[in-house]
Length: 436
Image (cartoon, rainbow, N blue to C red; front, side, top):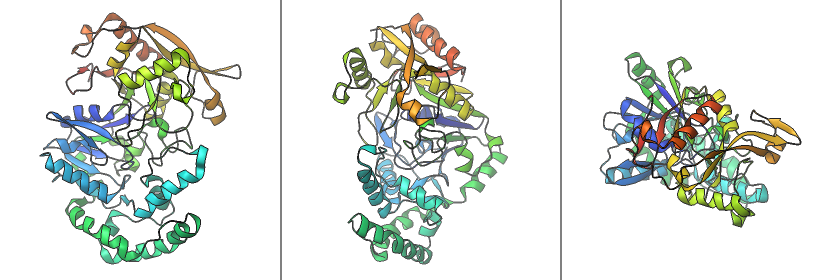
């Protein structure tokens, strides 16, 4: 099995958890390379669905080694709780390996995240307020605290003392928030170090040695292409590199070791938080009217579009081929897993955005100018649907209705990327493996 990067090819929430869970058993290592516990995905364990936020999906397989790479920011309290939850469900975390170079989310990061969002008012980014952005800011500002620092109490105290001298005046004088003492933070964080110590490793060396020995790696991305700090709809993005290139910088494995880049796309599209969304079907409570509002509500309810991490209602819209083509270029997609196709069984006809129009100009490519994106109008093609036909029992491509196959083949043609996995329901076995 070649080494593969799995990336979200939209605004996140594409169903990466199911696809990762589906194929992870084929790999020797499953590696998270960016983001933090602002991500969330659901995996199946027996009859139960478990929500993971930091733990790589490889933890579900006894023979796979789950790895948290250097590009991830780690809230140790969240990770310890997640490990305890998994152990209580009979899932062993003994193979987990954590990069000593991964940065640690501190309590002041979470405070500052929430305070900054509140300050922005109507211009809020829509962060999860879990401290991810401020932690990455400190990383880039070269004043972050890493997992390896947490493992050495003396170094941890020294670095914490220096950082708090900068953070406390901001917390107190600007935001009127609680200031932290070194002892207060140590009392909470040092016990985490004792639990996590045995899992800390030189993960870059570990993974490169594994590749030399013939092992395979699944690089598991979080969020999605359009939330990438460089290639997303800035500033309405996350704070890390979500695209395929982030797999190398976030793990220490060079790009020539990557054989395949699998993009995950919903059969429609969603996003959470603020920012432009050309095909959005606004809900009635957000100003939507008529059929568009009804279609948006139907997509949300039929697709259970509520965030795993936040519980927030996701914004919904029709499939955007402009975004799909952009994601294919930015990530170098070799193939796509199409998810939630069964949700479209609720519609008589289905729309696909093939281009944008803004100020009389047609855009067949994804425009990075924020002013264009905010005012772009979708140009749609309308395709026949397969309303009320239950496709969740289909296991072979030929079993799908003709209209369903036509929809898939239309997307392949207009995006230029083959679809090797088709998800027709939430369960692992509700999947058509087509060219995988």
